[in-house]
Image 1 (cartoon, rainbow, N blue to C red):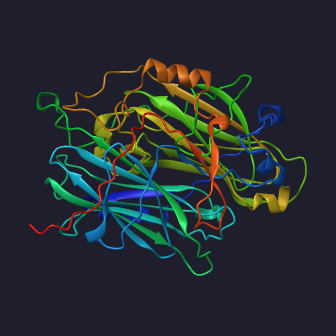
Image 2 (image 1 turned 60 degrees about the horizontal axis):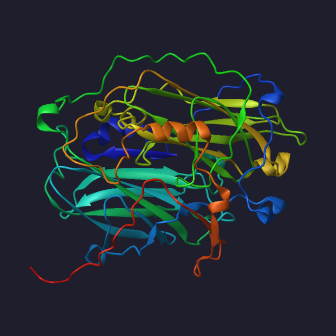
Image 3 (image 1 turned 120 degrees about the horizontal axis):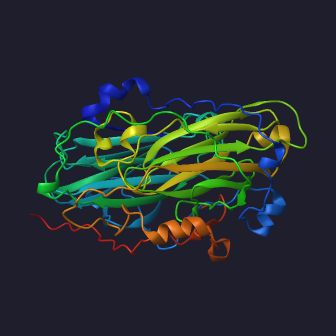
Length: 448
């Protein structure tokens, strides 16, 4: 789960808090056959041992070392994806060189070891600051009530819109990544995946001039999708997320595992998603927060989440209705509205908490996803330049075909790698969509 604020919106969002609230999903009496178990994208050895899938980092991610101070901060390039790591209680800096027109978004995914111990309040804080230590925006994510180690993502940005007051100038900015842990947490390093996206300004003649989000939109829940489910194995990271279109999809998930899916959502369209956990064949008891489903936008920014308990019977969790994708949603205070500001791939991360195994076994457990994309695709804003990476804010015919065909999660393309300084175990690597190889520039210490 994650939350994000800009300094000018902090007071309005203070009530939400850093920890946020995980909403309990509504329990539905679904037929057991609606959530059939399928083979998940796990290496055979991991499947046999019942261990969760390692996170799949983008294959083209460049490994960089976060600096402990701004002077030595490595520069990140727009459109680039990077790997790094943060120690317990660590605070790291990365550098951005920005002009005075483009918006910059940086998402950081934290990946603790699969055997790590975490608490509900452990997590990550990400900020973007200017050269005078002014905070442009900040976001946070934490592991929540599952108390289960899994990938979590937080995002922050530098925006130059009409409702911002600081951070408008061209110059050097810094991404600040802070690991938040409590006593009782495992001290091992967390791997990081940083994703940096640049959004160009609008053409002056095409600028909306709006300073508030649209208020009139259909907030009613649509009729649930029915029909036979199609098998679709989820990916192990953002880069390997399985593409889904509108429909009913089935997979299987193990306790402690996180599965990633992506859905193309165009300008003017609304996304609805429900996750259902199938009934168990054994075990007894109740897990208060067993399944969580988190939604992230095309820049991997947190939008919303939902969760459900588990007693061995089938249960479901549905995201509350979200607004149609619109450029002006960015002016909203709520994350679940402001996050729906881009067309492109929206990501669903489904996690089954590790405590489920204590009461109901190692699984796998049946998982059904019901995904609806409503509304007619409209034209997007007129940008004055190109986004980085190219096409990140578009939905193409190829994207829709990929969603229909189920491309994206290809286990045979993932390869295991081991980081020497990581005792937690290997990490899988997968190729990400539309990512060019980033360039890393070391800091220059020449006096000016």
